[in-house]
Length: 169
Image 1: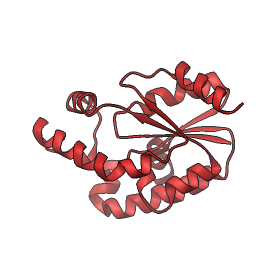
Image 2: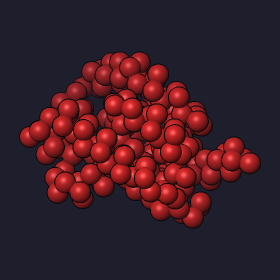
Image 3: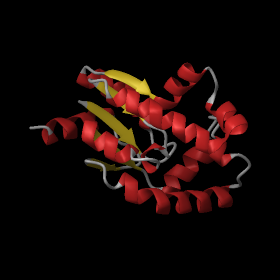
């Protein structure tokens, strides 16, 4: 069984994923990094040269590949659950954990972020806030089907591991 971390960009999936895998004795995969390794292109290059639709198809193929493995903690991309039947696949193949961070904290993290995020290029703080609000409105129906929802601006891997262990009993 795999554990899939879902949530908006900058919610902490990558940061929490490695530590969570360590605590649970599982392997860790960051889907965006894995896509870059498999394609030989950065996420930005894929978006710029081939478009978001192509990226989402590649992302779906990678998710299907990973879902056929076992014993993984997978940090998904923020939009991963919202395309094709990705959320259904993850729920069928493992435990999905929605890291639900407040809009204010997401704006804070993303406005300070040094990470290249194609969907945020050139946005002011006000535009970023509006974008996050709109995207969460669209994505929440997918995210909320996760088997475990962690509502916290600063969850720890230890807290998530404890909740996962208790839910698996």
